Length: 185
Image 1 (cartoon, helix red, strand yellow):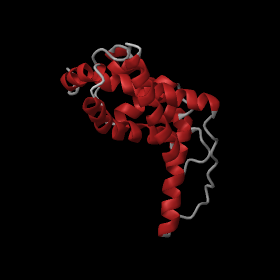
Image 2: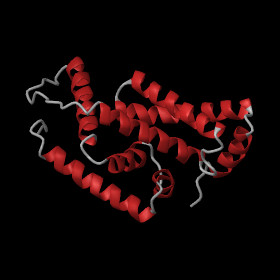
Image 3: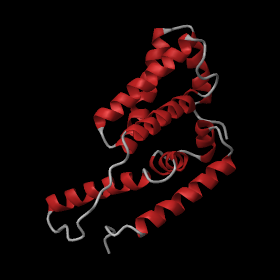
Image 4: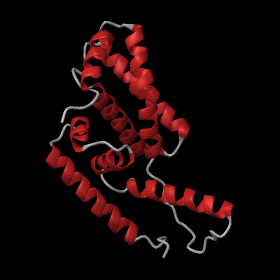
């Protein structure tokens, strides 16, 4: 299955390689909100997610200036750059360990909001404990709603490898979450 952005990618890339400011603006307007959402889900901080998106586009522009960058799949290229940025970020700043109080009250609305926020943080922390490739496949598949063929373009692996990473990632997440003493019953 061809990426729904493949033709758009080619047309925009051709213009972007000529430093067409309108094309560069279109690329940013089209893909920055998606990259931001992706980065925010992985990083949990709007400030850090904005930094990721800014650096992703800066790297893209530098690659274009040097005659490099994507040849066909613009979206896949930008997600790969963002993924590498997130991976580097967590190498410098490891995922924080979270301990949830199992006696947390959730009867009241503020407590429910707090509980849900802690659950999101717990899931993000657990995602940080699986491999970067597994994490990327899980986020793109289940949070971004991508198809396996689109994911394979981003990670430069076969669809079979995507399926294997997805399976191993889900198994590892399940093990980590079930062995976590903070899991509520």
